[in-house]
Length: 250
Image (tube, rainbow, N blue to C red):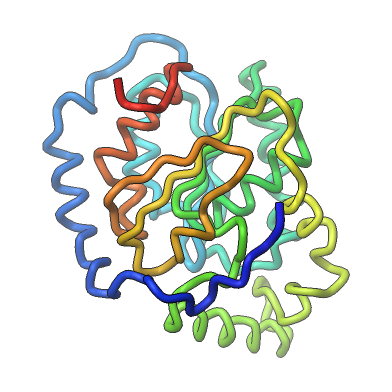
């Protein structure tokens, strides 16, 4: 999988589109068909939040998964801003604990940067991962983001350069600290890993073209970037995916 320089590429959606989040959440909460309680014992799931976000950002998704009968573990992050390799080491431990407790391999669901981390984790721990879902995750180019977000990335990296604890630095992009992470991200996914990469052409945060993972099924929704974790159509895709069927509409 080759990275592509899609930063500042034409076609990025206007930022005001991200104001759809509240409407997307309301539509989800009002859709009774998506909130039916399941009695079956679901696959274990590990949730990983996006850049600058923490586990609280995936609280609605966690509640929905538990209602379906899935054991759910969270990343333990208050904000996803640490060095990718340091995060992956912690996620490997959490993945191992969840797989051991449940006695089954785990489905990874990550939003934005969380999906990028989830992909690398699936490559690193294939025997413990049964499925991978990435929500607006720029796996082909981690910097294929809007200019305001790119400025935030640079500011955070400056804090890391000043040795602010728990924050990535400029050396993470090309330095030795994240070399293994970069190799894992560029590697092909292990055979048999069911994978879905969800993207939106109206995403105003991440260039949708950077989300088209060649090793996974690519599914398009009309969603804001932040709203992918609460968008009804995303939940329908997850419902089909977790039911072990095709994610394509029937």
